[in-house]
Length: 312
Image (cartoon, rainbow, N blue to C red; front, top):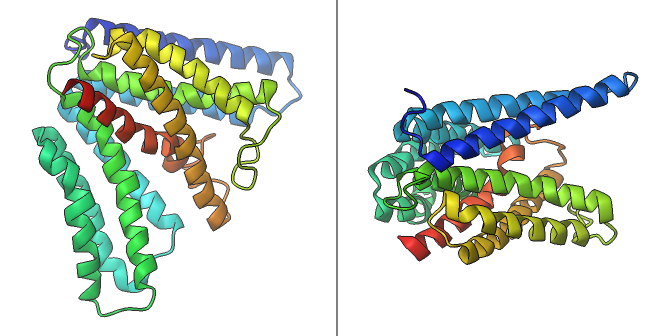
């Protein structure tokens, strides 16, 4: 059975997420009904896309660890492909890019094996050293530093960072009533809720800009309001979905909220540098994979190592 292995609290959390989606869909229909002359195409697309995103995630979570690891490996592939499509690379590095893609199955193999030692050093050490060595063999020195930096950063963001989500599934022990699924749901829900909270507080109370040259809509009021909201939520939910205590959950909330903000503005800086609005158009209403994963790129490794240090 698809749901037979899902721990009790994780199943409750999944049902709660579906409930929130149903409520959001109903609100969307009401808004469109009361304002028939306004264009709510993006809102409709966003809501429908969330159904697809959550639906696919829950299906793979329900199929077990192997399927979930494959799912996030595919996400890494799409994210890496998208990143390399918006950032210019040298013609001489086409063969080198192959090794960047090869890092995906290798990195997720270490995840599936639960081989933490190799998982944690394969990309930051071995691939970091291998990529420039392979580039040197091509004999092209013009633009070498920039090209190496692009490939290193691309793999770190889209493969190494994202793979931490998958590794949460195979951590031993933990909370028996939520398992690894609970850790994944906790991270994903709080990261996305953080985006919504900071946006909402910013709209309601926002007056003072944080970094207007990067993201003019980001305000201190939005950031601090989101930080408080996520910290309290994280502390309350932590004992149910994670091995963390309530106090540790508060700390996790601070890490996720602050990390999510940084990930958001970092990818915003990339887009401003490239003078593009979205990283892609794969997800209607959201843009590309990187537009949806920007916060997770930071929160995933930060949250993973916080939990790993405390309990593993």
